[in-house]
Amino acid sequence: MAVETSPTANPHSRSQTWLVIAAWIGVLLVSSFPEILFDALGASPPAWLAWAKPASMALLLALCLVWQPLRLLWQFAAVMLVFSAGDSLAQAVFASPTWQGRFAGSSFFTFYMSIFVVDFALAAAVLAALWLVKRRRQDFYLTRGQLDAPVEPVRWLGIKPGESWRVFGWIFAGCAMLAVFFPTILALRPSGDQLARALPLLPAAILFAAINAFNEEAYFRLSTLATLPQAVGRTQAMLLNVTLFGLAHYLYGSPGGILGFLMTAFLAFLMGKAVLETRGLFWAWLIHLLPDVVVFFSYALGWVG
Image (cartoon, one colour):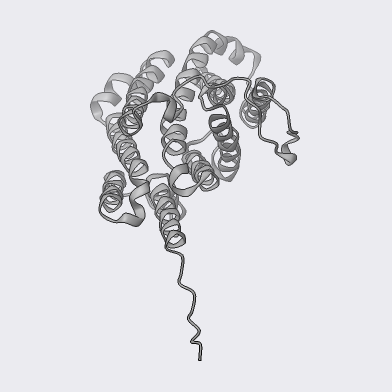
């Protein structure tokens, strides 16, 4: 008599499940999610949290190196270790009495440039880590990319087959700028005198927007999209990137909260789509740049009072 045997679970499927679970845990731990939880509980994040993040990434990297089912995540863990350690160090610099005493009362240009010098060092560290694990900058999208690459159709965005990034890149960037303009500048209701005093700061706002867009694309976008698709697939990689970027702006975005999360998560989707489809950074940087000009000009308006 034939004996029925239950089908054996697919080892590849089990391994893929572990990869996806570990990637989500890693992204949530390294993101602003822990701070959001403390904020929701009405408590300030403990001092140890900043260094618990790189410690968790070091543990994840160790697991990736010793446990075969997670081996494909080692590049992600290594880059996130550099990012989280660098971010914690940057926050310690900003909070230090030396930095506060030197820059807290300085001019608009000096204050924000001092921030971006440190932030650019963080972006450079992440890019160096990506180069070490990838060895070719094209493999982590640190290139202009194909500017006229076709846009993969998205029906709910009105993108049909045959459309080009050379057209939709500008459309997305312009729409992103307008979407940020209304809840920021209009909410401030600046007076004519305030606008006149802030206008000389516009070139600095544009410069800061350009630097910030590059920095955040490096350590939010390239860090994940260059290391996750081969481990968890493109769809999961995009979802993880959207979550990481959205959570980063929940507490500190302009605007913040749920609206900030939803807006920046949607922008992350567009920018991630641009990086993967053009295999380069230009359109993602531009889509990021234009709304950031609005954000930094709103900071200039606040600066002049």
